[in-house]
Length: 65
Image (tube, rainbow, N blue to C red):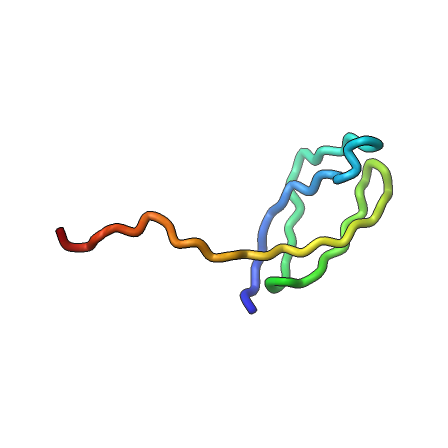
């Protein structure tokens, strides 16, 4: 598993009852598939989430033409 440290802007998913939107990111550390717990400062609900990285190949080109 890959370890990570990433800064995320965690917004409350309960958009019907809470309008919390952070001004600063939250730093999250873990490994792919790790569960994280976050409590929304706006409404107080606690959520579980995972950060998963799925590698993607991009910008592939021929080295010799």
